[in-house]
Length: 366
Image (cartoon, rainbow, N blue to C red):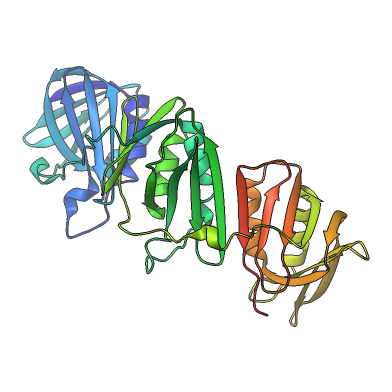
């Protein structure tokens, strides 16, 4: 095997793929990148058996071949080579990396041990979406997914279709985020539960890409494909909770506030919150008061009032400050609506005039 490649192209592809290599010491081949040089391109593959990627880049192929080499080492080497053109050559089973001013020999793994990436042939189960919308949908909800794998169904992001929209949902049982994006075609068969850890990698790759992504799936796998980039991820085999049962159909109290004013108040309140990050949201439309209160016996206490348009019944509720402030990354409108339904009931936070995003957060018991 012998091929020549521009450093910037292979460096970027290796950096993306290396993040998906495995860290399992009992299967060292999973720590490697597979280089497949054939025809007029180089394919770079990586997998940890849960998620896999193949990136195809142009290269001058003199002799075709395959080699598996340590991903972290190759990534670091390419990051520190100043030369613009690199020659790769297989010599005595190892990979020679040569430039005008340097030579390195990297010991290889037996490439026959490298797992095959799943290929999804059932193309009828697919939809096309822009990379920007895909990333937006995932990023607007992923922070609400459970971090523990004890319940894999909620340690994930759920995608489903309804009408001409795709919904992205994540919950950890204490809060829930829902984001919808419009599609030009109807697809009612979408029902994908993607592990949270894999969602992070999918976003990281497609955040650097513009253009359309084809999403295809079968019973066990989902793939994301765009012009030389192919990602495949395991799907969770289970049933996502019927979250719509807990989504309030209306509200008894509403506060409409400026996004920045509310965010500033939350930051100040958090300085005085206790070890549970507890703050009290006090809404009294009759006296026209919208206040945030927090108290820490070791620090002190704070009350801050925010200008708001209020309606409905007075109510005081305790919330985890972190759970509320997390959703601000998904609120793009200048004004936000906080809808409440009395003691012990969840709050719904939305951008005023934005039907595409809703955030539910449960109150604390004390």
